[in-house]
Image 1 (cartoon, rainbow, N blue to C red):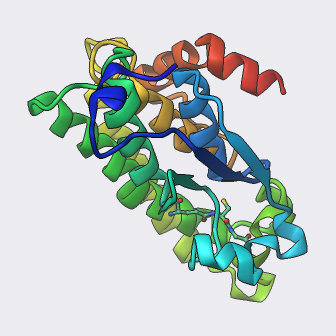
Image 2 (cartoon, rainbow, N blue to C red):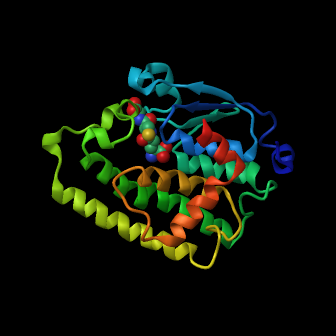
Length: 230
Ligand SMILES: N[C@@H](CCC(=O)N[C@@H](CS)C(=O)NCC(=O)O)C(=O)O
């Protein structure tokens, strides 16, 4: 699906999109965004455990050596939050999956930036304080593993309490509405990816009933359900 905005925008004439991905990684968020938008692209799967993300060719695309990244008509864009906002703006407005320029656009950016900075920062701290067997697929996080000696119970408790605070904020944002911007949008697609990861760690989401209800509704989206089914 290519939006009218995209076709009419004189700065964007052709359509070539490459998506650099890896299983069980932050790239799953971009995977879900592309699936919701129905965008066809060239997909390059990296094997993180083989160090693909740190190889010179990929570092030319993303000097951070991380996935996801996209290259759209020759321009590399990395950081999943930037990718979601960019794809939302270019393809999502006509598809009614991303708000047009308005205060609601600001709301969309607020949740996406918050999820990647505040929420993911607390989640990463918890992740790094967990023993490797509770970290999901260790191979996809090869450069983030910590030894058991580095584990700190205090750091874990602090991360859990910061995460609970974030989940309270998200719960409040969802009170009285089905989705973060009322109607389903790429904001939900993005934020559910991070909350789903948090739920897979040692964090009880049940006290946050608006969050759990919302997560379930996100998982019922055909695009997300299909990706989750593998
Ligand atoms: N803030 C980045 C985080 C990306 C990230 O941490 N990706 C990890 C996988 S979850 C990665 O590529 N790690 C490189 C590696 O393991 O070699 C984003 O949102 O795009």
